[in-house]
Length: 177
Image 1 (cartoon, rainbow, N blue to C red):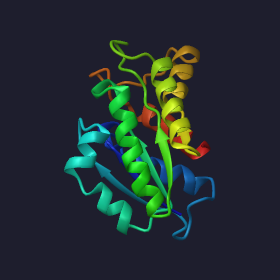
Image 2 (tube, rainbow, N blue to C red; image 1 turned 90 degrees about the horizontal axis):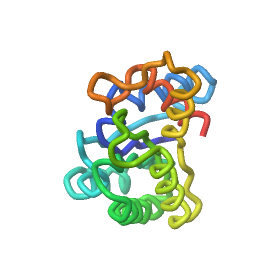
Image 3 (cartoon, rainbow, N blue to C red; image 1 turned 180 degrees about the vertical axis):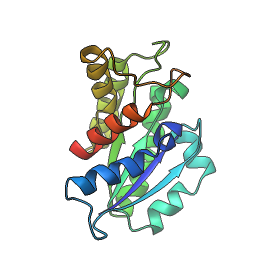
Image 4 (cartoon, rainbow, N blue to C red; image 1 turned 45 degrees about the vertical axis):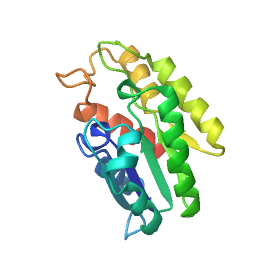
């Protein structure tokens, strides 16, 4: 399998893609070239910016990927723009013969802006509108972990980006999905 991750710093902070590879390898899913990962990332960039200012579309079209994971930071954009650019990417992904997966992220620690539930609802809505699109519910996993393990630190000092534990949880959720 060949997976391409497209996203912002939530994807590249602590190398989420490498964590997915490590966990998939440990689970026996990624040995001997069975899993090849790529990424097209840009800090602070919602899907709209990734569509306009990166080689993401070209990589999807020419990369031979089986799955493309789209990560939107809804606190950097709005649901309508997320829907529009997820749809644009999805069309290119389908044309390339790949599958689209949405990576649901988490709210900022301050809880300013969208809540976990609003982020989850937006991802489910967009997935439903796109058709048979899976959602990696990392944001919901974070919410549950924060409730059940109050000692677990998921955010670094900026209150947005993940600690290693937060990245590990997101990666484990991705592998489980």
